[in-house]
Image (cartoon, helix red, strand yellow):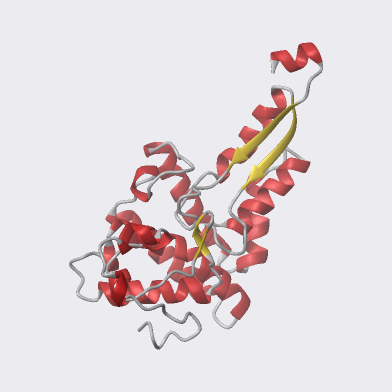
Length: 252
């Protein structure tokens, strides 16, 4: 910053705003986007490139994050709370918006109290939600879904964003994804089905979701689905047959 100020050179920032190791995982950083951009500006930054997770529909709150970043790059002093509420009402519906806002605020507070977010971390390393947290979060998402019943577009948006919490539970082996649940494999299959049918094409940067899946995959976590080698090494590769993603009868 000082060198650029003295010499007239231009300082640019390439800023990461998501977890590239697993796009759908919770990454509660919406409240710090504006302070970060303002910090850059205060230190003579000439240009900012904000890299999020909006490629396709892959990331946790990807559309909301992209909306905030676009608005803040034009107007760094913009009211973030107003922008969030504006987007939630339009994208999820006015009935669902308050429940999703409560979820966003709760996860942000939890992250601020317990962790430092890293853009290449394993799921358990970024932020921890306990059983009671997850119970409350599920109730909020249940209420959000009920609030948009009959509105297919917004219901899909709610369910797609809820995948973040479901992936967290599955990666952490908690709640319905606990190894103690005899129906855990069924829950994993349903989660994978919903990931694909709701438009998710990548779980990790640079790895399309088109790898072979069979029984071996369903006993592993979504984190392992993102990187085929993480679980394929434990399987007999000669017996693995690709699953047709257009025909989920073969996967269930």
